[in-house]
Image 1 (tube, rainbow, N blue to C red):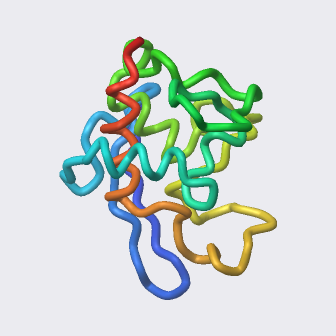
Image 2 (image 1 turned 60 degrees about the horizontal axis):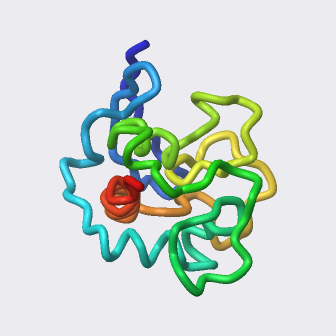
Length: 139
């Protein structure tokens, strides 16, 4: 499956286009490079990424980690960067009944907090930073 996507919101701001191939977005959004340190901060941030509400991560001293989603430990060995990227962009493209929120989609969302309407939960750089960090989790 090959699909080129981009989206425009009501204010005219555009999401960067990307191409989905099978279960992957192989190319970084906008050609950006991710920073694993910033990505780690986003993953652990209970307001921005909020990953630990559903996932556990191999981070000592982080309380109240979730068990709904798969553990993040070893995700860098299980999935390549493009596969991680698509799951962050919009997991529902792989698993339509997922409870994981789309972090880089604005169309077709329901019950969105006013602070996030007409913009993605994370921007392209934040997605790439998270991809860079999650790729380091190989054990």
